[in-house]
Length: 140
Image (tube, rainbow, N blue to C red):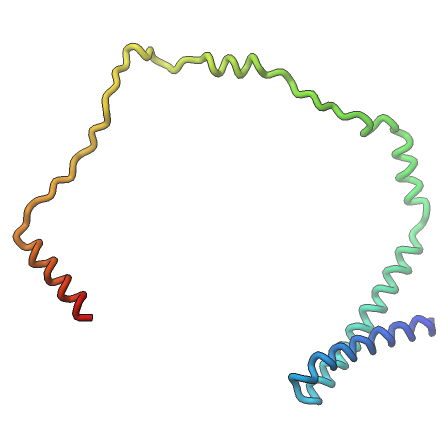
């Protein structure tokens, strides 16, 4: 364990140096030092947690992998074939194209759309109001 702690301290010191180098140019000495100490603690904790996770994964029982391999070996046909054919739906598509709309087309007669027309009424005040608007806009 003593050898591992040296590595954890080394990672923490690397974090300390990087943080101090980055923050020393823009901050006071005390601020840079505090941030570097916090970075040392964070890097130390991260390296310890990473080491713990690696050791935890190494200690997994090997029978977990053999159970998965045995399950795959028990069913060799599973996943071996791929069916790329699609069902024939040409008759259904043809039926959709042959359908006629409800009602006979020969009885219907085309009538163009007649929207209501906008009619402008002549106002004697319209030119005066327009002149007022133009005067108002040119004053600004």
